[in-house]
Length: 251
Ligand code: 6PG
Image (cartoon, rainbow, N blue to C red; front, side, top):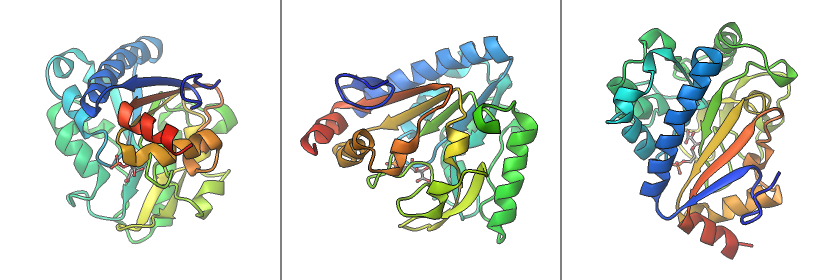
């Protein structure tokens, strides 16, 4: 199903500004958390890195959401991680911990960090995949089924650390793999499309005119993020007007 106004797949919420995106996304995550908790008894959420989600995470870590969301029932995973220590400011875990995880009472044992700082990234990828398999029920294609995966969109149309022209795009039999970015830190761990597309819900947060061409690439199917097509799930976009206008101008 495509959104008639934008041509993007799934359901699209267009907000005026990045702050409005963060406000609406935070409200949506709070509602989603309660729905998932009611349906499943817990909330299996995968967070992205990058800068866009910071504002949403900060809102979730402040009143009213800090005090209303059932954090004790959350289970946190990551969509990708850079090959740097967790204390490195470039780490996705570091960003999520700074803006959200250190401020809300999610039990530490239920925060599953990708150990991308390890020398053996293949072993780290396989161990993370095992955590997903041991923790979650199986979804379409036999992949572990996350309740929600929050993703960003790079200017070149990558998502997670699934970059154009890399072998990670074509993996069909693994949930987590080492990958390589076209900017530092280059070495990464990333979830794969089979895992993403087994999720119950996938939510993109995209703001800024610089993301217009990448959104156009999603519409036209020419960028990696276009391969996000949940097999038995919902795809949502929270985008701002600047990104939408730039997408239309790129068309
Ligand atoms: C990463 C992210 C990546 C990010 C996009 C968008 O490790 O960098 O997981 O996929 O979501 O690059 O990044 P911004 O939100 O900073 O534009």
